[in-house]
Each structure stands twice: as C-alpha cells, then as structure tokens.
Amino acid sequence: MGKTAVIIINADSLGGLEGDTARRVCKHLLSEADGRTPDIFEVDGGRLSKIGDILKYKEYDVFVLLKGTVFITCKGIRTLSGIALKRKELSIIVPVSNESLVSHQRFAPPFIYHTLSVFKQAAEEIYKKFKDHITDVREADDFCLVFRRELLKSMPAGGSLFDLPGIVKKGRFKFAVAKGVYAHRYGNCYESARDDLMAHVPMDAREILDVGSARGLLGEMLKKRQRCVVTGVEIDNEMTAVCRSRLDNVINLDIEAAINKKILGKYDCIVCGDILEHLNDPWKVVRGLKNHLRKRGVFIASTPNVMNWALLFELLRGRWDYVPFTVLSGTHIRFFTVNSLKELFEDAGYKVKDVKLQSFGLPPGGAEFIAGLRNIFPGINEEEAKASEIIVVAGR
Image (cartoon, rainbow, N blue to C red; front, side, top):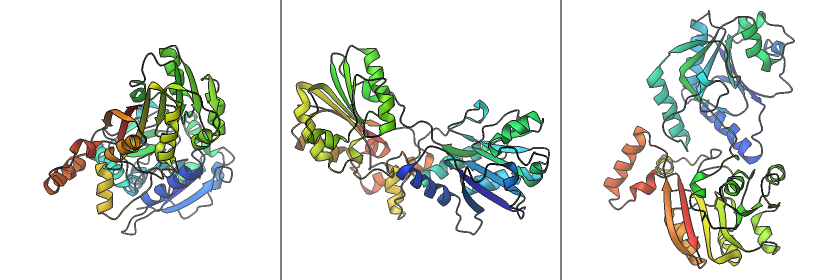
C-alpha cells in the first residue's frame, strides 16, 4: 500500500482552550498502538495555501487534507487511502460527517458520543453499515479531501488549495463519497435556542436573566414567544456584540463579577444553561442569584451529567480525556450528578421543583455496560447513567 500523509490545516474558528483540546483529540485519534499511524503534518492555513505547496512532500502517494477541526479515526484514514489507491478513476474521495455543506455527505450516528471510545464505536457502526461503499458525486465539501499525488500534477500549481474541489469540478474530474467513513465536525455550538430550557420558562415571566447568553438566540426566541424583557450576561466580547442586537440588555461580564458589582436587577426567571460547570464557585453564584430572583420566580439550570455511563466506562479503563463541547469539555472545571446539583440549590435555600434527565440514544456497547453495572450495583439509577444532561427547575 502507498504511503499516506495527513495534513492538518489550522483554518477554523475553534480557538482558545477548546481549540487546543480539539487538536490533542485529533492527533490521539490518528495514533495507533500497532505502529500504523500515518505521518501527520500540522500547518497554518497561510503557510500552505497553494496546490504546489503539497508537491514538496515527495515521498507520499496519497494525501489526506483535514481543514480545521475534524475528528476521524486511523481506520477511517486507511479506508479512504485504500479507496484512493484502488479506484484510479476517482480524483477526490471524501467521508460523511454530522456537519457538511453538501447534503450527500451529511450523515450521523443515532447516538451521541461524549468520549473517544464512543466516537470510535460510532465510526465503527457506520462502517459496518456501509463498508467500502462509495457513491460518485459532482461536488464535495472541503473539510476532508483525499487524493493521489498524480492529481496535483494536472492542477495549476499556483491555484488555491482551498479551491481544489471547485477546480476538480470544473475539470470534470470525479468525486466520491465513502459512505462507511465518518468524520466529526463542530457546527456553531453557541447558536442554540435551547428548546429544552424554554419549555420551563413561565409564560408570564416578564423580566428574564439569561446567564451565559452566548449569541442571544434563547432570549430572542423567548421575546418572540411572550412579552418580556431579557437581560443577558456574557463574558465573550464578540458574542456580546451579536447578543446586543437580539436582547434588551447585555452585561459584558463574568457572572461572578456581575454579582459582586451589584449591577443585576430583580427577575421573574433566571436561566443558567450549561454555565455552572464553567465557574470557579458555582455555589456562591447560585446563592448570590437568589437575591435577584423574585418571590415566586423560577431558576432553571442545566449542566452535563458526570455520571453518564460513557465516563464511567472510560474511568474503568484509566482514561479521562477532555473532548470539546462534551461532558468533559476542556473548559469544564466543576462536575455534577443529579444529587450534587440538587444539593447545590437546596443548600442555597431554593426549593427544587423538578429534575429532568436528557438522553440522546445509546450504542450497543452502552446498553451492555449499563446492564453489567446493574448486576454489580442493583440500586443504580439506570436513567441517570444513560443521561447526558441534567435540568433543574427551582424556586425560592
């Protein structure tokens, strides 16, 4: 089999700690204990921008170009490379993904993955379903492109590497989608209406505080649903700018600082959607926000569930790998179970009215693992073990 080079181009907006975490995850997935790890090159988009730039990697027969944050397994890379070498009539081979601009590349497993082990299970389930099946197509998304070296020789050396799909399309070359190879990508993780939280916001709430309002979509949807004034609290400057176009007021501060500065008002409803796990002292924040909740007000909070079966499975394997935008996000510094989250509110003087668990499907291995836990710990809460997210609704 020919030699393969994986070139990771840092070219997307996933920056900061989550970006660093994502790059570690990508490299970890491409590493194999049996020594079959492909050669990996990580470059900035500005340094590798022309088609001719790749020709300097003379010892490689196949190139895998990953643009931005793309998670793909080593087996997936081998499958794509094998297709590229066997099917000489195909110019570019691409995988399927949960996020793609092209519809025939859009495909996702029926269950969520919080850990690398479960991501690998997801990729394996898709491979079992489709194997090496490929579909000829006329266009492809550019987040993962696989091609043989000789393709570049027929391309203009000065052409933009990111325009490669367009150049191939104009030249009447062939694309193919490898249906059995799955790659994960991140969409806009900060643009969510959070219907799950909206469902608990009282229709008669007139003044609402959205803590960690991100780009303000939740507040905007609330304002469309009911007559209310929404104040957001957001620490990120760029998201605050967007948020201000959607909400009535936006406080550009960390919630801990906002409480200390005594600049918050009184509210009928306070929403903390996946915020508590990011705070140094969530106990102090929840206690402090009680002073800003009206007598019959409602406090709605959600947080990832650290008792999720996949995390227990990883711990028993000696792993605790941070993965962006999961229970073990790189920016999470506090972790909660149902009981510890309820106690956080009760200790602060709230009355917990409701607790909801959110689950998003189980892989076959997950159901088997939970069944095994039940045999060892007969009293285990199976629904909590399945859940990814906890929602608490509390009042004064």
